[in-house]
Image 1 (cartoon, rainbow, N blue to C red):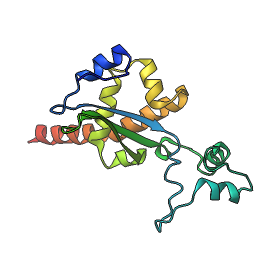
Image 2 (cartoon, rainbow, N blue to C red):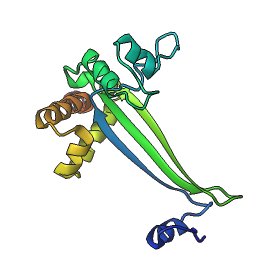
Image 3 (cartoon, rainbow, N blue to C red):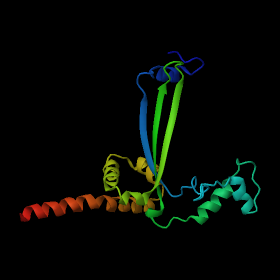
Image 4 (cartoon, rainbow, N blue to C red):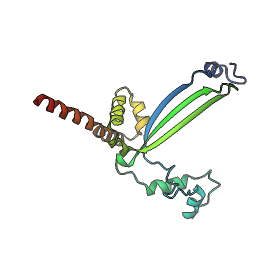
Length: 178
């Protein structure tokens, strides 16, 4: 498929995308604040950025200038420990629609508290194993620039994964007694 009006290199890359086979990748990172969901209340009602700005006595230009609002939210939801942070997982897919041959790029983003790893030690174990293959730059991208916070997150996730190894060690010890 010839992509008209595209730079030749991009057209070459995207010409390989067919309706029969999609390209996908996943990505994850740890973030301090999940500010996206703080606008949604327990009863399902929604507070707009303009309403938050007004509550703080600030003007808003229709949602385009919400940095001060974001700063207020960040102050309200201070991150004390890695348990207060959030895991973001993205699934990205590029495919063509079979009838029109239009290119479609989708991103599905899932955000959960990092503390949820305590209920899924297998996921925590997979994360710790994936770090072995990451460069320092990749670790900085995934876990943030502050080396102390990165170390705290790594320790936190490793402790969640340790449950698996403790259970295995206990089982081995019990088997050895028999």
